[in-house]
Length: 342
Ligand code: XIL
Image (tube, rainbow, N blue to C red):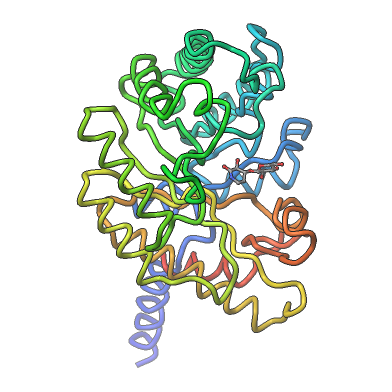
């Protein structure tokens, strides 16, 4: 009898051990064939290799994106002078740790150097500038950076034609978007090319405008492959059904639809354990949505821990704690929820 019980205990222990979820998100994401990871903060570039931030990244990400340092203002601060030191550092780190890198971003109206943001350039001149920037950056990381946010935030529904009046639009016209995708595709034909935007995750005027633009690009054979849904959310304001509908219609266009900059802020005046649970629930629901869709492959969180999130500054302190680790790098309920779902 004793032997039987002993054997039973051993077998149950064996099965329990097999079913124990891996204690990090990376392995769990790998098993699900999901690109999961974080925007890497600028302070990363001064950290020593054994910094807890880096340890945490290695355990929990199979994909990285630079929060800032691949933006034009960092890469080409002066015309024709390219600085790749930090971008190289990130790409080397990712390669050494067998991680993917998303490139963010090539053409945007913000975080471009002063010299580039100049409407006195002729159309020809600015197209050349754009071509040179895209070609230089994308070629350098060909085969290493698998995907690029080629155009970021070009839609503004307050304009009659829905296009933001950026320097690119003003000087080149809306065709700057076509050209940006074509230049990126020429520089790395294998790269997955994204249009990326905010407030266009669910159904609404802005996501309609993004959808129509993408449809239009496809009709004209412009090489676009994916829509990035930035997903800077606030708890209790996420319409999952609308996001699902949007993912579906983007899928019907034959494009990937991925979450590229997720954070879920908590209103500072209602921060509580319950709010953290609500946040965890939303992280989980969004992850489940991405796992369920065949045209969704990535779930990228905009920062590793609450101590380094851009949200409190951006919202003037009104929204806080939007990420899955707290400022002491301890996992929050949202982390456990993601692990549970994976
Ligand atoms: C933000 C960074 O997180 C901040 O550190 C920086 O000061 C401003 O940009 N949409 C984007 C991202 O595409 O590049 C932005 O990142 C957040 C909004």
